[in-house]
Image: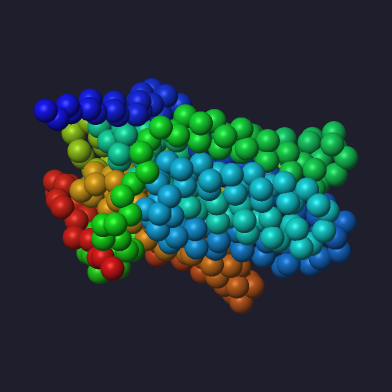
Length: 404
């Protein structure tokens, strides 16, 4: 008589609350390392003897590497498992930050590119992890981790210069962000080590270039990315050209950044309640359009000043990114499809984010003013609006997958 051996119990998976906390801790590191560089840019230029263009290309290169990482994210997730690859991607951010601790041009560039690639891979894998473990609250979770990214970015910008003074140099200030990234990656890997490795024998989901919804998601992310990075780059210089002092223009930019938080936190959660994605994405886009037209046509209203325009743009820009990720989670059939679609959308978005502000700068130089550059941002809102109209509020369907 054959005695059947009892099956081994399935490995314990982390609970939803633990997964959520882990995601939020990881997300803090997905902008902080890059946000600490701009406040130190002039110091870096002076000490390394590089031009303004070369110093700016460091950040542009990092953003373009975020695009490369986004395109590679789905492949990394399938090969190593989304959870393991996510921890490794944040580990790359730690390594890149540590590399920038060497005060030289080569480590600065190499470390920045490594950070950008790690951020790009991690951003894509987060969408798949949310789909796999927290799909029932995808909107709220996505909004939460985007706000966590904003908190990390804001803190990094605020303490970059004080850290440089306290630690004795700009390079050590940049390297300091290796510590929270390494902590987050280590804690995440330890927490998710019991999640089974995926089966690699099945078909591989490629970037879904031929899928209509994926192309629309990429179109949407291109529009919202250009709006966010375009205003991040040129809002303060524009108001300096209107007569504001650098300090006052910097305060405008700070208010713009703070206005991202309610948009990112509330819009996806409200859209999730009744799956009214088109209504909330259109409403927040209207905020962006009204604010942008206000800045262009009436940049200095009497009494109230430009503050309402800046707040409206901030709300719209803050909501755009998480709403784009949320609709991908809702409209894809599984975590693999969600990861692949996010990879395409974010990759296209980061390419536009890297090149769009450069195009705006060229137009400012050629025309001697800002209207043509702001018109580029209005074109981005039209692109985003087109995608919203076409995506709509149709129920989730099985997304065709391109396989090799």
